[in-house]
Amino acid sequence: MGEFTINKEKVLQALSTVEEPDLKKDLVTLGMIQDIEIGVNQVRFTVVLTTPACPLKELIRRSCETAIHEHLSPDVEVIIKLTANVTTARQTGPLIPGVKNVIAISSGKGGVGKSTVTANLAMALHRSGAKVGIIDADIFGPSIPVMFGVEHMQPTITPKDGKNFINPIRQFGIKMMSIGFLTPPDSAVVWRGPMASQALKQFFADTDWGDLDYLLIDLPPGTSDIHLTLVQTVPVTGAVVVTTPQKVALADAVKGLSMFRQPQINVPILGIIENMAWFTPEELPDSQYFIFGKGGGQSLADKFDVPLIGQIPLVQSIREAGDEGRPAVMDTNPIVNDAFRDAAESLAQQVAIRNASKNKTQTVEIQV
Ligand SMILES: Nc1ncnc2c1ncn2[C@@H]1O[C@H](COP(=O)(O)OP(=O)(O)O)[C@@H](O)[C@H]1O
Ligand SMILES: [Mg+2]
Image (cartoon, rainbow, N blue to C red):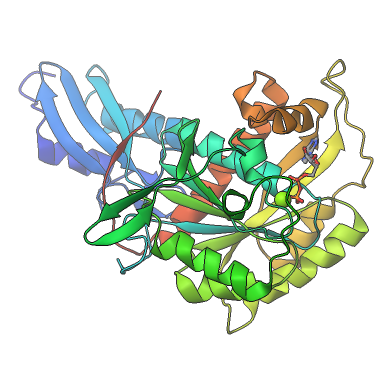
């Protein structure tokens, strides 16, 4: 290229032609380009994504490379490091100061797979490089401890700044607290609403969560005092509604969705996850049997004008893994892994879109 020299300004100019597809602004305006270094016939820079689970990361990487080649030089070597800085819309408050996003996982009906979806979304987000926690707030059936194989564990207490803090249980890289840890397994403790609400408040006020990108709340089915307690205790980034394609489940999901839109709750709906969307036998991985009906999740999403962020098939190993104390995505069934990874990425994407206009905080390294 003769006298032509590449400098940082020219790199920024070239990258300002690349739009972040979700946020509809260019990467330079969004402050996503950092650490530009110019070498001999080489350009290096870092792209700071809004989540390590960004489904568009390869697209963004390629667009950056193309922009440098088109605007600066077709021969220059482009080395891009992708990192992420999960965004938050929260003002730091006295409760859970290090938690960037609180995500309510709800369902209209019990048994639709809310806890299974919560456990596997948490694992999939963790695998992308995010810091993840779970609060199991389902007083009617706290199943997160069993699904993570920690039902006999007891959280410990540590004094900190003159106050006693509960340490969440840590399993497979996920921090978790459950109403189930407060009662002996197999005991028939009947929780009254106020007791459960008090326990949930403790999970926020007295638990040492540290820094988390996503804290998922496994709520009781339907609508309850717990839902109200949640939104009154901490700012909630948004809610996910889990349903099966079955008519009765969809009808109950409608109630759940409407509840989040009531003025006194007013939690944005990040999307719908259709669980048990179809049955796929392990030995016939390309077959889909729509045993609970077809297209229900999509039509519900259309009706409420929210995205369908995932469709999870009914697979025997999902149930088996859960019963054996590990989220199914830890096994190597590609059908299961792809479904939960896609759902986790779509969720993270919706969180990023929701937080788009707000300030950013720390950086996490992506595991590639
Ligand atoms: N996609 C799925 N494939 C197979 N079994 C599933 C699936 N989702 C949930 N299950 C099973 O269905 C039962 C109910 O799921 P669970 O997550 O406990 O529902 P909820 O929390 O909504 O009450 C569990 O035994 C679980 O293992
Ligand atoms: Mg459950």
